[in-house]
Image (cartoon, rainbow, N blue to C red):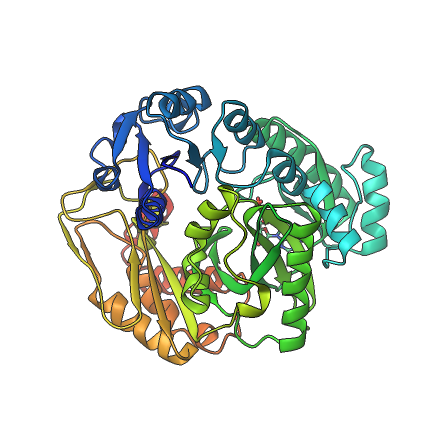
Length: 470
Ligand code: ADP
């Protein structure tokens, strides 16, 4: 087993890895930027090394500095968390070549599943359902127009190296497709250094369904069932839950099993999430595979009892998975709300600055994964998520009720957060009845804005004006 793990990340996920490592008797090293020098999670690590200034290209994305920190602290493994370098196959390779175990898949498996076109090909070959579309990256725009005519509009142009919703364009006719391919190529080249794009059928009203999988270095691969993450704004998830409500049990089992087959066929070790969209008839189409631990992994932990981060560490150290597929049972229902320091009433503007008061919720079935506390100053450099509130209960109804209570107890001041929005979502009939799709949050926000604008027409330049400034 490892003696010391370096964590190439920050915030709540750094704390999550520290906790799992400590419980295994493993020491931890945090690397941090100068903007994070007072980060509360750093106190929990055994050692800490500053790797540069606030902007992440100068610190959390500097492979050379992270490797140097691992060398001077004699770490034997590196956990990448999520975001930053976690899906960078070159980083995984440099870790391996420098003698550090990368806590994640091999660079080969990561590259295979991380490229959307090669991943889709493999998925097709093992029977994981995928969207109809081009088999390869587009060379000739007119070939893409032919494929679009075959599968029917609307279609979506996507970057093969895509991530974070960038390099995507929806096209409803051939003219839009031609300009969409050009602009997606430019955006992808600028964002990923790779301008390759492909097209697939665009689904208008879908739910987001994703399967948690995990493999080891002995050829075992299992799924830990699924999560529904349909509550999104601008492709960013806000609420996640497990299991996915209202899905036909036979269809659900089939798609979960196909996700495990996919990672097995990639000889994948570590945690991976296979993401799907599900249409109203409960047909599934794979979106992509995320080759790392996800923000929303706790809901799966709550319903299966598996400590996913512990298991990631164990399999990286060469141990076989500590369970078999048949051991995994679903117990109850779990929901996670992402608590972001953003102002939902002002266009979700990020709120950097001092947290003066922080009163955390608690009680049966309540879990808070957060690096924040009173006195912590949120730096402006990174994403605005300051914690995840997770509840577990025997049924979905009880989980929703517990979430409402926990959100009501949770007080953070003076910064604005997404807590009031989550309270609205928990009371929303579409959420409560699971009659939602990935656009329902945006529809709700739009209706709210419209109501506010019409209520304040006499005070021109007040609410509506502030909205557009934000
Ligand atoms: P990224 O890697 O950039 O996050 P994804 O492939 O995961 O890209 O897609 C991000 C989001 O874009 C999805 O959650 C969904 O909302 C939307 N999307 C992607 N592909 C499709 C599609 N074929 N039909 C409908 N929506 C899509």
